[in-house]
Image (cartoon, rainbow over all chains, first blue to last red; front, side):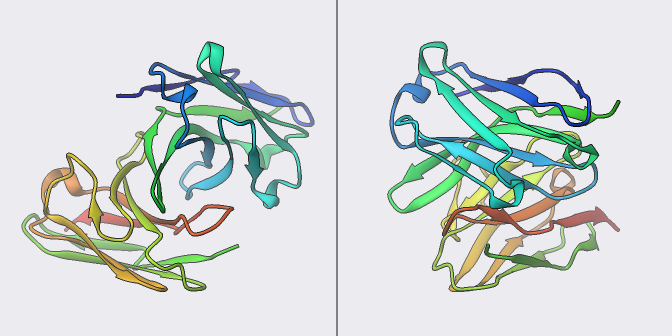
Length: 122
Length: 107
């Protein structure tokens, strides 16, 4: 079993950097076959994949974010983090961390955090 | 990016009905398609992965089918707890992308 919990400020000023941390309770973050992912959802809208990181440190991001996103991994603390720079009101959303499982050629998000609302406002 | 289009965007149904939601990808994605259920205020939950594999613990009234670019999620004998929003998601390539969602409401 794995549990994920997001933490971080609920309010960020425009042009500043949004920083969130996801803490995993299990030890799968120290093993391969999983990708540690951030996904967001504006109120009343759909899901947007932000990016993911592997245990090797290799990360991939959504090009729509124009290089504003950065994800890091700290296996010793079983945490991974998101930094999103130069935020605007359009970045206001519920942010989820999730684990993407690799099962052969099959990839899917099998565990999610509860989500944390981040509002961008002055 | 691969665009995922779901239909319908919403539907009304009664307990006991069979419901079908479709998802179309903008290009072929083999069977790299997952389905999620999201209840209000909650995180999504995986129902089906690899187009038709039922996730452990998910009731058998949920089923998925399809390959290539066209996929279907079927909910047989709809239960009250199934009223939620459903999303498809492709895992064929990065960036991962989701459909816009289908809201299943009580008639």
